[in-house]
Amino acid sequence: MGKITFYEDRGFQGRCFECSSDHPNLQPYLSRCGSIRVDSGCWMLYERPNFQGPQYFLRRGDYSDHQQWMGLSDSVRSCRLIPPMGSHRLRLYEREDHKGHMMELSEDCSCIQDRFHLGEVRSLQVLEGCWVLYEMPNYQGRQYLLRPQEYRRYHDWGAGDAKAGSLRRVVDLY
Image (tube, rainbow, N blue to C red):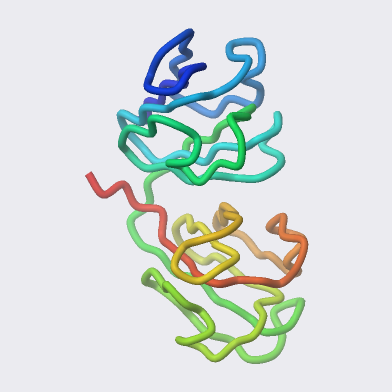
């Protein structure tokens, strides 16, 4: 299982809320989120309630302010525990509806462009495991949680365009 603690102030100060499962609305418990401690599990945080808005992936560790989890602000309104999975496999397609050139991936990829010479990823299919897609290479930029399912268009994973710079498997390293 997972355990995450949200603190209203930086440096693990102020009012806190402990969570061990998905939570669609943290607003009743915290007015803002200044720091986070992840004791176990992998988590996706969302800036808006009901798992909406910008997303931030966190593994076990201490995050003393929102910049450490690449947050644009101290707004965290919902969170999702990502279940551990043994194997990881994903297919990337250059066109919508799983058409065009296809590449399969089972390991982290720090730069999709360099590895596959793809300008854009317009659809994908997660066959096994959970992944985090980053809009820029080297695990930078907006983040999107990908769970086992088909994503026929980049809008299906929440992106505003087909930018896909890097991919990381969701694995608890501790």
